[in-house]
Length: 294
Image (cartoon, rainbow, N blue to C red; front, side, top):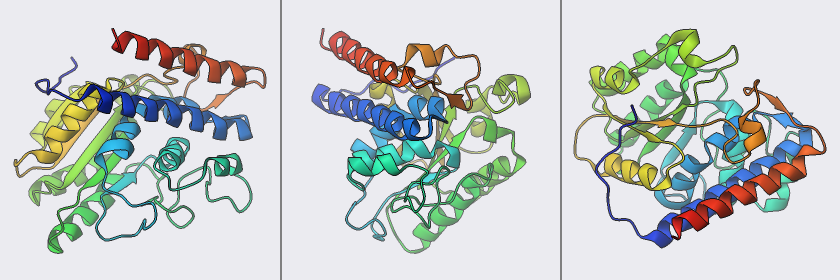
């Protein structure tokens, strides 16, 4: 069951601004993937709304000073979601749009898997799954000892919940009352070998995190208003516990023929399908805008 917090009155213009950012993040992701003709496209499309809420509204960042001590930290545990992160950083003005065309090329600042040493704005080198939350613990603990009021956000996958190291990190975060840590779990029910719930089900996820001492919420990962409401609540809460938001998402969101693909973890897209994918994104975005404007 999808759980949401009580509705909060939000400015419609604010919501629309975030939706526009999500649309561009999806388009930017497609632009990069087209360079290679393949990639983790489904994941980039599914997480775009979450990244739009973060990078267009919630994160305190300065693209002119990406190493500022006075910044929130967004850590991508799932390094293969790099397409989406580069798109979000481009939306946040860390990079010019034309640099997206260099994706995964020689000397590019956009390698196929996100790495801190290559890309301004990338906080950790992800890819070895199950390690991200532990790294986030260390950074959150360090910020607390420095007296900083900034937050650490860690995006991990539902598949990573099958890693014992994730739950060890969850226990450590609760023990040290890391209330400046917000984990986000992308629950798209897909990993390399099939559905996450069939490989090793972790449901009910919110109950498990609560049992580990976390403040847990769950919502539709494509409902911008619900995402924003929950993330504001988690950040502003005075509860001395780490926080987690589980987001239910759809791989390939916004491009119907990609959503319908049987093999979704790593996609190949034919040459003639790229223009259609961009068109479908525009159509679905326009339809959402019209529905919201009624």
